[in-house]
Length: 111
Image (tube, rainbow, N blue to C red; front, side, top):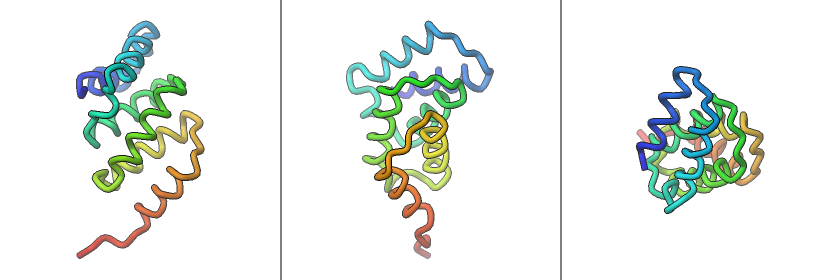
């Protein structure tokens, strides 16, 4: 649900780290397969938001990483870089994601 990503993004942009809200947004993101429905832009926004607020919820970033791998071909280079940075900031060092992201970002773009 894009509302979860946008709400987190708004709070992160303002630098407001409201723990009860972040717990609620984390639960919402994980319930009802919300993360599985995130579009690439909302995925990047959500990942950036959790990292910017330094909210280290392992289940959340595992779900975000899994979704990023699913939509990798649809991520723009900027969205992929943002998502990769966010996951790395949160402590994620999944070799499959990192290798795939580097390969995607260094591949020459078709003309």
